[in-house]
Length: 388
Image 1: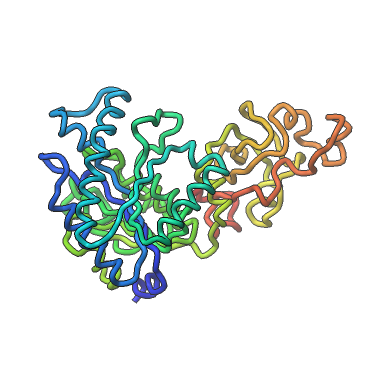
Image 2 (image 1 turned 120 degrees about the vertical axis):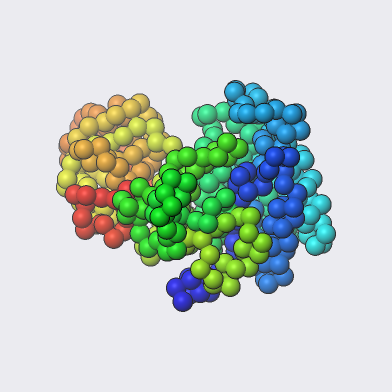
């Protein structure tokens, strides 16, 4: 019943499919891709909108070039992606074409999303493609991405895209049945976890970091992505990607895979962007009073609550707020640079102009530009926060 209730109002679905599902010994597994496309086409017939985040370009390029084993350098990965991406899109285009559906390709890097104007432009493009009924296929732009602008893996790319398109559900298709309480490769007693209502230490421990030889993200990556997605109020499902009709099973409310329930008190789109898309340029250590004000009361960060500044950042940069022990509390956009904050930290707002010679803002970070990174259920327990 919980599944059917959770999925009852879903109309816009983001499907993420990994390389471990899409590829085999002969490169792209055309049978699996046809099966996935048929499943998505059926969803469309049932009235759902679908956005696809698809891996597979690098694996396809490696196979086309006859390369065995792991690629050793970024240029090699980028070259393989350049070769494989075109073929991946051609395969998708042909498969969806049989159903009378058109596809559109969108390749992204992290820098496309950290710039707010580009973020909004991408959002407008994706919404237009949805309005036109096009199946949008999104992948990381591996041919140009370097470590500084990489998402890390497509699990995290999908989590960010879910925010952009305001998805109602994210389905992560992988090579396992879902999240287990222990690694099923190591334990015959491992049991599938059908429902996750909160991210406990036990859930964290159940997710391993091991990835397949052709994939980049292990189960830990998928669970971390689930944290991000559910923080935006979107349910998240990890399900077996090679099972025929798996998407129909899920939307029929069957107990397929692992369902992560959305957080009731979730972030707005802008605050989600601040919390999970922007990379922090530094850290502000705050005292217990400021911690309580930020987490429990939803207040802005004032100079009086800052006890230490770490990093070299400028006005408008994203900065993480941490407690005295270094545990993340929130992330926000600062109104003063690092050097200015070092001069005014610990002081009342009335002293800012006296010290700096000017006062543009009372707050170090205004609450409108601040995303609390503690589970809502833990807001009253700020001494032991669960961070997202």
